[in-house]
Image 1: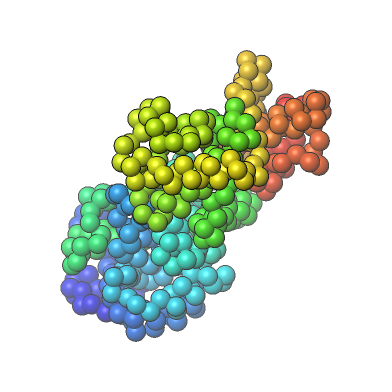
Image 2: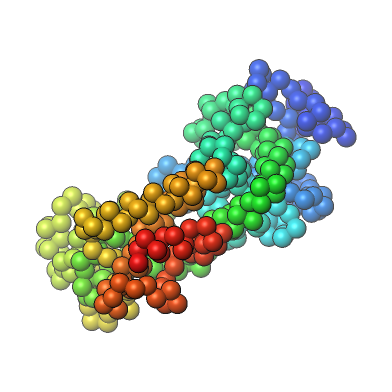
Length: 410
């Protein structure tokens, strides 16, 4: 454990809440910096006795696909710890801890943190409690930032000056370390308050379900299975089977290529270009010139491979699903607005943000599923047994929303 100035060390036996420095005035916080395997392993054994850990990560992600981890922050309810991942080599005790079901992992807006864990440690922490999601269930703001949450709860201002600093530099500055410690310092108390309120409202299970679904979003990343990536490209609604087969192969290839090169997907190939290639199914390099704003370097370095993939998809077509209905007609738009009005009405009764109860993306997924079924069956009546209900509507939202939404679509 690296020595830290005595002015910011926590005296033995006292909880953080008992001896704060003037956070809102001096903008500093107590912490211990962990940069050796022995101390981290010892603390992991200590943390196993806890009910929860507050966590955050600092990373750099400017021109790469994967975030480059620079620091892990931990608060166990008594002390802030800053783990230096560039100095640690033995991670087994820590990764085991991240999978311990008895230990709640508290994050604020954890999506990017989950990607860090999926990439660096090949795991997703569980169970997760996201204080940003909890805020929404408690009608305290949708997508509320950590800084604003701390201001609301405690009246303290958290500095933002180090948000985009270089977390891979060594040594890290005092300012960076203090900023990092503050990012977890308040989470345990926020968690305790939010959990109590959610239990009173009967919404703790809602929170747990939505946090578990966040983890599921990264299952493909862990399994490296990108065969369904093409389904996110709704502009392919008019594609025939051959074009969809090409799109499926190319979308999967782009996902894999972005990870191989550690570059953002759009650096490999932008969506519009991917769709254009699938639409024209090129057989020779010269046909790429028909695609607007297609990078010449892409044609030079990736063109031949893409042609091979196109030919393979045409010769041996992949199984595909026509999951993209036509753009909404005038009457369909009217019914979709009725769906949105239904969600707004229920959200107002529950005092939760509309975005939490039923985002436009969720409603569109249900609308599309019903439309595709009706077109396939040639009748308006909905067969609930065979209907592919979106996952988000199979949990706590089902009892609240599903019957009313399907009645509108009937």
